Length: 91
Image (tube, rainbow, N blue to C red; front, top):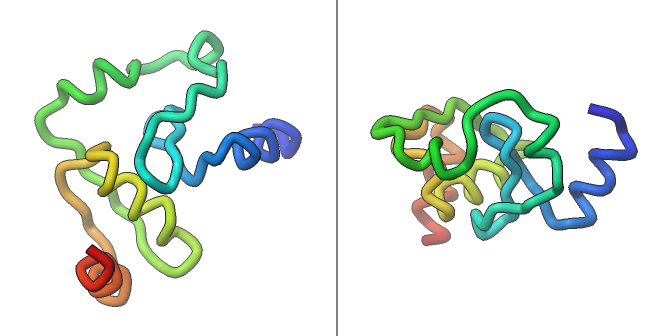
């Protein structure tokens, strides 16, 4: 993805993505108009998948991990101890 598009996504509040479907820090879907250019599962289809596993951690990924948890984009998380503790302590 070009830096210009990444900057636009950040400007819309996007902090992470799953399958090129972007979300903000609260886990709300950010419709960046890229859906028609992406070959893959839609947000609605993704949410019907019973097991959705995220593998991520570290300071750099924390906001995206938290957004995925808050927005229920995932059903399971594999992460480091520091990230897990921080998530539990915040919520």
